[in-house]
Amino acid sequence: MSVAIDPSTTLAEIVTQRPALARELERRSLDYCCGGQKTLAEACADLGLDPDDTAADLDGAQGGSAEPWATYGPRQLVDHVETTHHAYLHDELPRIIALADKVAQVHGGRHPELIEVQRLTHEVRADLDPHLAKEEQVLFPMIRELAGSDSAPTFHRGSLSNPISAMLREHDAVGELLAELRATAGDFVVPDDGCASYTALYAGLEELEADTHLHIHKENNLLFPAVVDLEASLPA
Image (cartoon, rainbow, N blue to C red):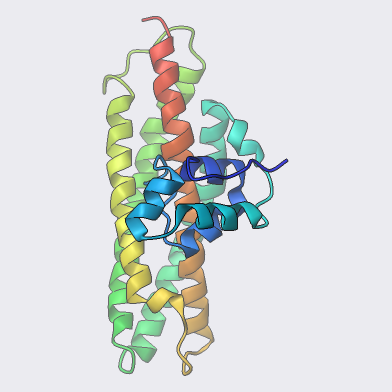
């Protein structure tokens, strides 16, 4: 059964309980990943939207119900994020980079904004590649160790809240890059003279944005708070 939405519901709760509504939030520029702890009323106030009307619109949309990941513990959620979102980025980023380079070369003369789209796409990858590596090689193994322990492990970086804070800052940075990319690309609307590669690039960038927003939501609003709570609950 779908969870009812009202202005006091946080953006994170909306997407966790009804993931299909992520697109509806994005369409209204409501940031559910990095800004997920805001209530719908607070987020609407920032954008000049009516919170009651927005809540009613969202509640009436076809939003489905919670996915299994909404109930996962830290170990399961780490595995899910890595096999779903990390795997997607490892596969998709090289393809999108190649398209951005090709489309900028072919169409950049008539559409100079494509040069900036190309630069921003490379910058997104330059931010995400080391970020994924740090999660896969450092943070996620630490979370798996914590989840399998009866007492709080001693990590050389101290509390897990330290690397988590660094990941949160990096999430904010890539979120800003994605917003700039969307604005530069005109909301990913392909011009009339756009070729198939142009269309594929903008479709790929829009999918990348949506997947990364959901990826960040799962970490910021589910995984990281659960890890902090788990670490605090274990005896030293």
